[in-house]
Length: 148
Image (cartoon, rainbow, N blue to C red; front, top):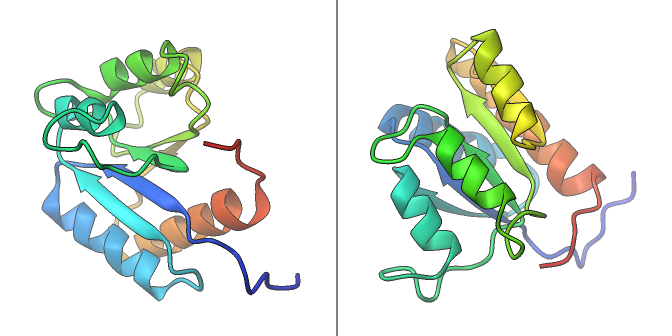
């Protein structure tokens, strides 16, 4: 594949309440080839405020992709996903569920709510980094994303 030297870095929104997973995701993205921009919020209410440009996120960038945990405080990831996919202005943003849940009901519900993919977080640093790098490669280098 020929690298596009003029490629614009992608905006990524990580919705994650576990500081360890936030750090691992940042490290994995930093080690990647692309210089993508990562914004992080730690609960579902913050995620929706960020996406709808409400205080304190009036100048927040529109993400090209959302990495969404399901088990969040205040408003869980399932509720956030339902809100996003029912909002005409936000529904085309790809949402990758990145969670510890292996429950079949969570997988089915996420796809029924139009998640773009569902990934169970692997245990172990190297596997986690590999998953994040693979996500970055697929969603930000191979897939053609809708315009913002």
